[in-house]
Length: 382
Ligand code: NAD
Image 1 (cartoon, helix red, strand yellow):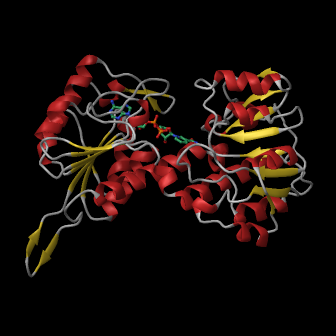
Image 2 (image 1 turned 90 degrees about the vertical axis):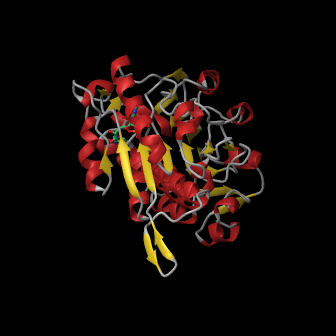
Image 3 (image 1 turned 30 degrees about the vertical axis):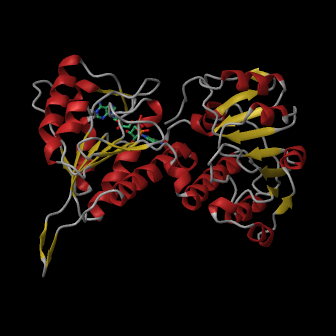
């Protein structure tokens, strides 16, 4: 069978779902690989590099979608892209089925199969396909780099002939995948790093990375604001008040605040209020990784960088993985390659077996055999 990757059409998107390296692995599984001409250019992969890896370069999107049996891409498809689907085809991409219900139905009606990379169950066996974590890791890293790029001082403290430089103080709010990546980056750059999460079980991880976990003055367990299946749930009003009181105390001391707090299927909790921004020193930087879901900071403007009257920079970009397109494409293409490996039980025959009895494949499949297959049943394994 043939697997092909088109150029992403979403404005500003620089990632690509197949790299020359992933294509070599896909060929070992027995697939012929196709790439639309120029698809990898913004991620640093030229057509010639694909050709050298045995990939056929196809002139345009129409030819690519027509020739490929399996289409691997990054962003959810547009209506026009879904219209290319036919009963034998399999599409693998991020899809966000709740937000794109009509497209999901359109794909199912056309008889195509769709695997949503954002629906891969978060169980141990599926970690190698967990593209959400791959992208969150990059976003967390890049948030710190972006903050540094907008901050007028060093992260690390220094004693120089020209005087002593204090280290920067960084607060990371939310210590999930992105938050932990941000903590690792911040501590390795030498900043004094603090982190808070409603899930107290992450305190040990935070501390093992060289950051200080922020505990609340709250009588009940810190667990009040957490936890269902490893994810956060909504905090009680009392817990939230204790959290905001702690942040108010920290705001004037912090140079950089990176917020990553999310609760599944909800708007992002508002945790960094206007008065906290006002209490920060001029030159401080906030990076709000929750911007796409409404923001953790009250003043965040999605996809923009603003500077407040008191000189605080607030960054609300939502395209951090695309800003590191070589890295994110490499990881995403590897996630796809692992998904293809699980879809290819023969391992060398280039033939997809869409096994709906397999927890991971079932969980991620949102359209199959003319049916919408979302939401999936809970996985049977861990
Ligand atoms: P997420 O993006 O949904 O949320 C980010 C973080 O924000 C979470 O740590 C959450 O606890 C925190 N948060 C929510 N409300 C908050 C508040 N009011 N204040 C402070 N923090 C708040 O989460 P994620 O990064 O996708 O991962 C969450 C969990 O899933 C983690 O335990 C992670 O280890 C686990 N996980 C497991 C797998 C796997 O087993 N394959 C893969 C990825 C993640």
